[in-house]
Image (cartoon, rainbow over all chains, first blue to last red):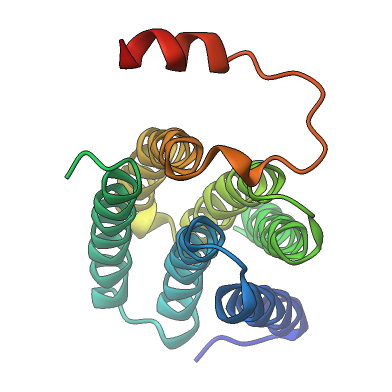
Length: 87
Length: 112
């Protein structure tokens, strides 16, 4: 397990970013706000998974990050098409 | 390699700061379009920088990190474009203090 002060600071920034996105996801006034917060949170979670793969020295988490990026993108595209009333 | 580790840590720290600033923009901005701008642009840069830094820290993983970086660089502007379009079409009254609306004429022409 490779952990030092720089990685702890990076984890803290990413955790704060996830909390701020979650607050906007909960209280966002319209549906579009919530989907924007979900999109940003999926990108943040992708980089968090990459960072965790380095800290725990597990190569398989990189694959998880890739699949998470693909699934988040597809979900956001589907909800955007639904908002557009084209689905 | 010692110097490669320092460059990797610099990129990881820079990327996490950009991710935090993007989420702060999501939280603070007044309008859905401002939130979209703040969230998507800076989180794209932050994720790309973080993954590149991890690839420098662990050079065996650099190829797969580049695959994720290229995928994010393609998919994130696409999803933000689709979201802006969907938000505009969902309701036109999302603009609170609009000065100019360049898409309105084209939108009305598309409906005809």
